Structure formats: C-alpha cells, structure tokens
Image (cartoon, rainbow, N blue to C red; front, side, top):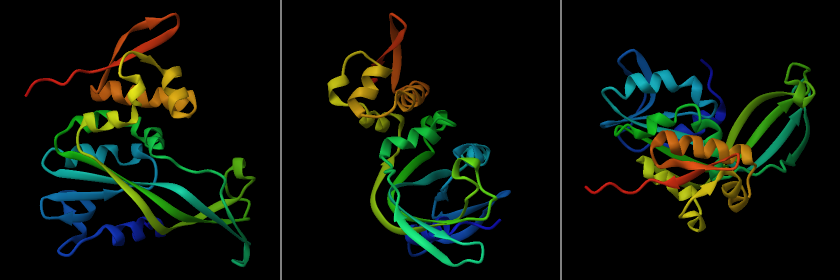
Length: 223
C-alpha cells in the first residue's frame, strides 16, 4: 500500500541506528523493528490497526506512534498540479485530541507489552480542487500530508500515565462537564476521555449527580 509522506517522514525521523525498516514479523510487516521492540506509526484511524496490534501484542513489545498537528499549513493545488495558495489552518491540535482515536482501543493500554508515543508536529496538507473529496470540503481532496517539524513528544507506558490529562483541581469526584470546563474542550471530547480512562482502569464511576455520571480516580494499588 502507498503510504503518505507524513508516515514515511515520521518513520525516518523516528528510526535509530540498528533499526530494521519494513520488517516481517509473523504474518505482518511492521514499520520499525528495534531489538525487542516493534514500532508502528499510525497517522489515521486507530480502528484500522487494532486487530494487527492485538495479534502482535501476544508475543511482542509494541509501541504505537501517533502524530497530532499543533500547527498545520494547507497547500491548495489545481487539477493539473499547479500551486494555487498556501495558508495556515485555524485548527490547532492538542495532546488531549489523542482520545478521539484512543476511544477505539483503550483496553490495549492495560497490556504490559503496549506503549504509545504521541508526537506534536507541524505538518503540511496538500489539497486538490478535483471534485472527488468529502462534501464537507466541497469536493476538495486531501492528496498528501508532510512532516515539517516535531515540536514535542509524550510517551505513555501504562494506564496511569494517562491521568496527566486530569487537572489537579479534579483530584476528587468530577463530571464530564467539569472536566470539559477545566480543559477548555468540547464535552464530547471529555466524554471520550473518561470512557477511555474508565476502560483503562485509571478512573472509576463513583455514582450519579442528577443526570451526570460522577467519576473518581482509582487509588494506587500497593506493590
């Protein structure tokens, strides 16, 4: 399958001396094989890679690498490939946007063989006025995505690492509405976050307040 420039460029950026690219492991091809660690780069929907990860996790340590664009430049081209214009997208991705995708497989974070690394990036998106794209973009197609810069990186190795998304002010009981307000995000995203954190075992449902579910952090189990 043809991979996007973004996927290819992240792979090159991420690789280290001694890594094997496009390595065959069992019935699968993985992006990077680093000693005992298999690294998969996913620039799109997590549901597309869930089955592959579950099978590989049976016998391997897996790291999933996912980019979120904090800064995006949009380049428009004509059907003939000529440059039309370049502009900065008003949308700015944040680390918590991870939950839009993690909602497809939160249970994998409980596997001791699984880790997730989020790259906060600057990227460029190439769009074409060809009438074949989504109706939401008035038929404009996304032809490619390119990596311009890696601005930051965050590694999650266990379920409790994801508790960093909960503001300190919410140490006690809290609702989705309270979480959304503190984080400054849509309540829909807060709901996805609490769904994931609950499935991970990082938080639990403490009860209900009127029509709202009330959550609480799970206590650390003594080692």
